[in-house]
Image 1 (cartoon, helix red, strand yellow):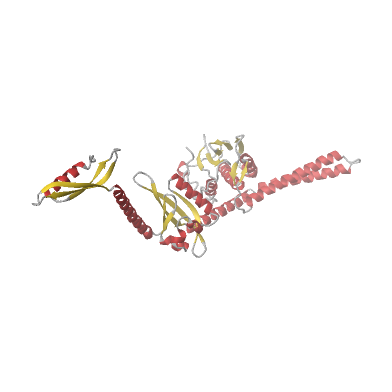
Image 2: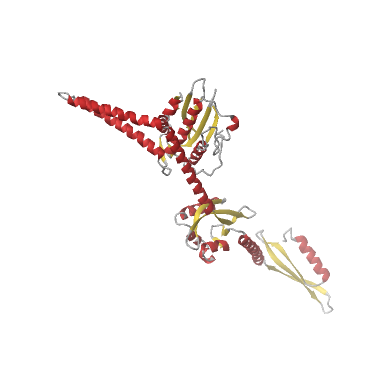
Length: 460
């Protein structure tokens, strides 16, 4: 009836009691009629005659299973309480706002640093009351992330604004990590809220500086293209003037030739529209405006760039060819910024080929479907890029031109990265350079990667 693990100990206790001739007791698990075991307290008491000699032993078996269970739970509770106190001491000692939550997400502890920043008491923040400390615009996102972490039981983080005791808001990075027992079950969550306001402000300033540099770069390029733009504008104006004079002459005829007048006036309108489109294109490239994300046809945008760069390509004797894939998905991004990237690459290629005395000066611009986006390539037949410089051509202020600033390709890379793509340089065969970049199509979310590590190698 005694559990095999307890039988040797119970036998030894019984023999010791017999030898000592004194009352004794021991605990052991006893099997019941259903085959299960329960803890019992087994006591033995000697019975003596008038001379004091033991004539018999009497014993009792008292069920102490419930007591054992309660003692085990108490020990576990005490251990957990000791662990919680240790954790709380640790959370109080670290130089960051920290907290602890139950497995179900109910926050049961905040350290002093967290409470002092929010200006609330522990009772005012426990449970789910902490949500009042987050900015109303960020709270839905914070809640969603927290619920996703609880469901996935995986660590995670979210950036959001927290209200200070003085009513102001600062950006924080909130991280949460699950704590598990020996079986892998989540028993608690521990988290930290780290102030990243200064970093966020610095990143915003960096992005503004990059935008300013990009604008300066565009204005500089448009200055180089001034002669071409002047010709592009004066040509439709001169054509419109000639067509208007022709209309006047047709009106002077007896009788007036109205059909010819209508045709001449239609040509005037078309010439005026063409001039307006050119001016709008110039204004878009020069004006300083915040990035505007929209879906657009990349091939059409490339054709506009080729027209803008026509004076430089003609001056350098460059033959421009295109191989634009049909049926490309629209891309999502800032049309002007992406045209600036392509214009930079075209002008660099044209100037590089201008130094080549022998051989054809050919520029090929191509587009093709690439994974979940588009691949754009600008290949020239110029002197190419020294392999030793391939890793440096995108560095800020690095240039091989005597009059260059070294910012063009660096700005291009920042723009492409901000659109979730990659830009890299390589060799063109049989000679020349190849600059290529990728862009996700409009179905993919734009990624904010200005702060991502710069890469010079293309996709493998």
